[in-house]
Image (tube, rainbow, N blue to C red; front, side, top):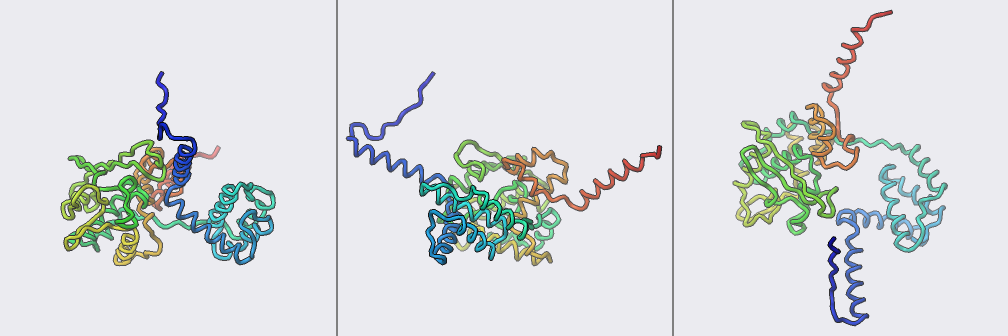
Length: 343
């Protein structure tokens, strides 16, 4: 039985120097408790909380039950109920980090939250899924001779077939591109049967604990073939090295990344050009569309969950049964009931 390896950082150093070195490592670990995206979200929540406390001239810690109720009322002026719950999470975290108990445990707090839910409602209207039919309509308004348009179209197909989240597919900017987190040219493997994407980081893979392999099919003579679009992108927009974002494209001798903001803007314009109300759709519509289409293809729910890399049953919220699917259920009911006889 082998013992775990112990790394001694500074052999022979005195106590205070070693303690300082160890403290810096502890600070590093603490600084990486939360994912980068979560830090940005919490910072936004914290700014709102700090603004509220400043307006009422009350301390941020500890927050009295009365002021906690007032904060919920303050948030209700511009947020839906589900967002209010999210914003309150930073109040709990801020208190715990300050060595204070969370104020979100009292009966008083839960009674206010329950009342807010009843008054404000808790319904969420998700964006509609982008289906294969919609993709075909969009394709008529895409110029595959344009490197940027080809990158956009390839990203659309990747999102639909892989069920990937935007955090995996697209980057905020070339400067913020992280080869360990974002998909890059190095993560693609081509074969005669299609392409394979290798993912080592996602919302559910935060600690490099596993690798996710996503196959992309080859669909001959179809504008919706993801592997063919990806291969065409690589040929039209080659990059100096493989350490570039997956959907990088060339323009006048320079390489640019397809950022999420550019992608979303192009998606809205493409939908509008196809005569579709773009306000009903978002980048997430591709992930939802792929999952819903998988359900229409009668794929088992567990396979849909695996493909979308969902840890829990929350994937069921993404499934949007079409009218045809619901009609099929009604027809089965009618056929079965039609065979029943009166006793």
